[in-house]
Picture 1 (cartoon, rainbow, N blue to C red):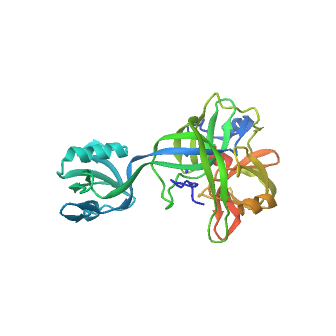
Picture 2: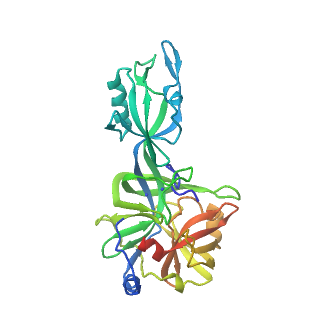
Picture 3: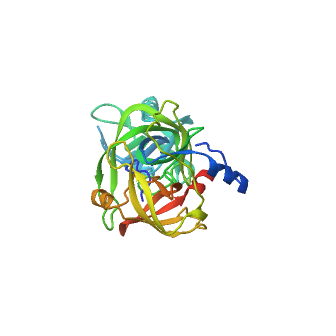
Length: 336
C-alpha cells in the first residue's frame, strides 16, 4: 500500500512513546488504557529542503536553457543549501537565486541519502526577469493516514503502522511534521492491480496533535489536550500470542470524520515476521467492499480489534486482491 503520498494520497503519509522492554513492562503496557483510533488525520511534513519534482526549460533572451538538467540534477533530488546557506523552503531558494545576479551557485544536493555539491549558473527568464535554474520544486509533503491509538493518560499516539514514504515508495527523512483533522470526501475504489485511495480535506489550519517521531513502524506524537475524546472508545492491547485465526474488526473512516467498524477475518498470524507483516487479513464486510473495494490507501493505521482488545493495525493492501492485506502487531508499533 502506498504509505503517504505526498503526496499524497495515502499517502499516502504523518512520537515519543514509553519504550517497553522485558516481560514485566509489556504486562504494564497491556494493562494501560488506550483510546481506539480509526480517525483519519491529515499530515503536513517538511521535506527538509526543496525537493525537485520536475525539470523545465527557461526561455531567455538568447535562447532556451536547462541549467539544472545540464548540471545533472534529477527528479527526487533535495536541494538543501546554496553557497552554504540552508535552503528549507521555496522562498529560500528564490532568495538565493535573486542574490546570485546570474553568477554560479554551489548547491548542496542530497540524493539517496548522500550529499554532493553541484555548481549551477542561474539564467534570467526572458518574460519576468527572474533568475531560474529550471526546476519544479516542493517544500512540503501532505497526505492522509489513520491514527491507530492514543494512550489515555499521556495522549501519546501511533499511526500508519509503516514508514512514511513518497509516491515512489521511498522512505522519507522528514522534519516539522504537523497533524490536522481531516474529513474524507470520497473514495477511489480499489480494484485488482491498482490500489484505491481515500480523498481527504484538511478541515482547518488548527493542528490536533504534535508529531514527534517517524520510523519503520509509523508516525508518532502527542494529541492536543483540547481534543474531544467523549465519543471515543477505550480498549486495552493484546500481544500477538493472543491473536487467533478467525473473525476480527477494523475501525476506519471512509466518509466524513467518524470511524466505523468493519468486519474482517484474520487469515494468518506470524509473530516472527521482520517486515512488520504480522497478520494477513481479509475484508468480509460487504459495505466496505461495496464502497471502497476493500483496503485502500489512507487506511494504513486502521486499528485491528479481536475479542475486544487492540491487537494491531492495517498496513498494506494486496494489489492483486484489494480485499486482502497485511497488518502489524500493536506491540511492535508501541515498542518501536
